[in-house]
Image 1 (cartoon, chains in turn red, brown):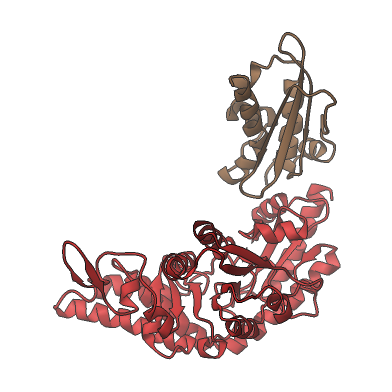
Image 2: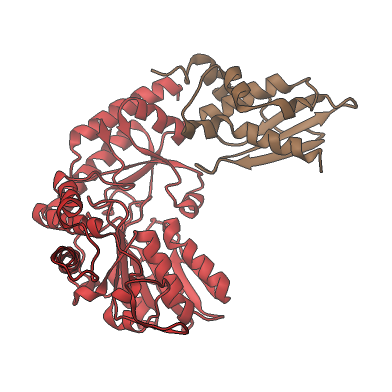
Length: 385
Length: 124
């Protein structure tokens, strides 16, 4: 089987699965509660995972790392906590047209609740978003800019550092959706400077059900939590309650403990493989795929070939519907995605309803691309296009 | 390998029956496939006895949704509008001569979604 859908979810290395098993098999107990040694060990493992992920991101403090269910929950949490108390009627929120629905719909909803305006950065004629595109939309009313690091459909790598600077210079806070970049590029949150950075575990060789909301210490401190319950309180009376410090005040209920430990393991593996090596490997693979796809006469969407992109390529076979292509490729053992990839506005911008998408992980090789091309040729014949 | 994409189905895809718009429209319905956003619009012209005398559909779609619409439109032409109420997924698959998994069933059954909506219109 050839798996070309890592942008949807990656496969899991054995070490990551072992870590899940280790937690459930040897450490299983709740954290921050039991005074018995088993619970202390579980707490150590969980907080150790937090520290490892903070190091992985080069965060200043491990308390800047909040465990969530995934990217979607992390974005929604920022909208429901910070957004609810900082966005007012007449304010402006800026997103890009490249966003995954999970970094668009929560802001649409927030803007709707508050009477704020949602503005959209569109790519230039080259399909690229640069600082000037963003600057033209910024004003003193801009309170938030939310943008993807790598577009999950176009593969575009956004210059997030420059965009963040420009947005912050205008007085806005910045949220970076790193779901598609964290397993492929080096991320240094201090260098990037964003106020929040969010990602999921399962797209970066970790388990499902866990993700990260990184937030700058000052911002987290000044933000009220949005979920309430156990694990996040300092004192509760029948009439009112006080919260713990960050990150605990944002982690109501029992967090995904084993999953957090396994995610930390995945970040160690990525470090061991070498982030630069990964980026280079996937870059070469992507270039090779683009070259072969062009030779086949498919229409490739997203940035032009001479602009570096993430390991994601969306394309259409002229005359063939993406569903038919993915279905027939799937029957031949090639897993690719078809649809709008949760980026409907971007497909509308392209003037199509759906596309096929391939995406790479560390386990892919050029032979996978060769097999893809072979199968696409067969699919063309079968569909008579 | 599957017989989903057999010659007959691909003929319907590339040269669908009743594709286009009617001049006189007595009933119209439209629905989209949530998986890909493809939308299909159907139109009927009815005679005095409630017989579907003319039928058409438009919209972009995959081979399965277009072939399904093409075959269903042939099946319904000349039938009484009451036939819509009796139409179910089983029957659509029988007409097409194959079965699919749940993901592609959404494509095959998109026309049925529109037709159900059009059937409900008469009760309004």
